[in-house]
Amino acid sequence: MDINYTKNFFNYYCFNKPLDKKSIDNIINLSNSFPITEGTTTDSNIKNDRKSNLRWIKQTTSSEWLYTELKTIINYANNNFFGFDITNYNENIQFTEYSNGGKYNWHQDVIRDNPIVRKLSIVIQLSSPQEYVGGILQMKQVEEETDLISSIPRQLGSIIVFPSHMLHKVTQVVDGNRKSLVWWAGGAPFK
Image 1 (spheres, helix red, strand yellow):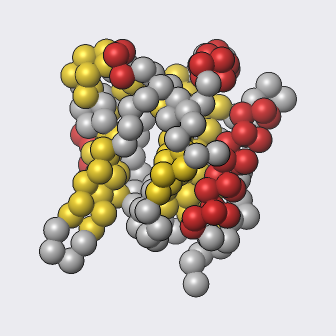
Image 2 (spheres, rainbow, N blue to C red):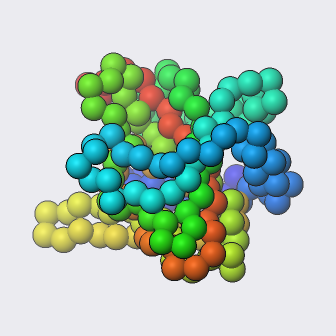
Image 3 (spheres, rainbow, N blue to C red):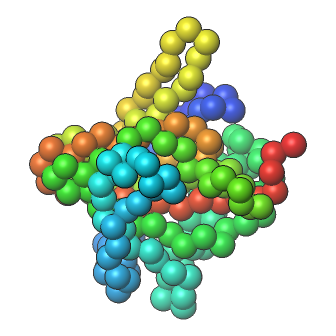
């Protein structure tokens, strides 16, 4: 597998080989069997920070292949780059849609006061860049004198794995519909 990355605890891991169209279609078809909910944040004071619709893909016989595939990708990135102690893959997979006005401001994927710490996040791009305007996934690396902001490739099927504590956002979708898949792997607190 061809991989571009810079080795840094606060960096991300992009796979050069995107997910194929057949797998993307299978993911979208699978997600349609789960109910739509509104995206929320854990802090009710920042309600305007997120506007999206979600489908939580539960681990069932019909979704087992997807859980297995994502676990393989996360483990590959972790073994070759991060080296975190990952022992938990029990969260549901999140299928997210951002339509006109959809966004998710700067945030981290960590959940406070949880004995299982989210350590790695994976995002897979399920829409082609021609299907929407805006909706750019950006990562922020906080440096001493400046913040470095990277825009993640929008290629259909692109895969990124990054530390869940890393600040990231999805810019506002101006037109169209952006679909993505998000999941987390975790374990005991960092030592």
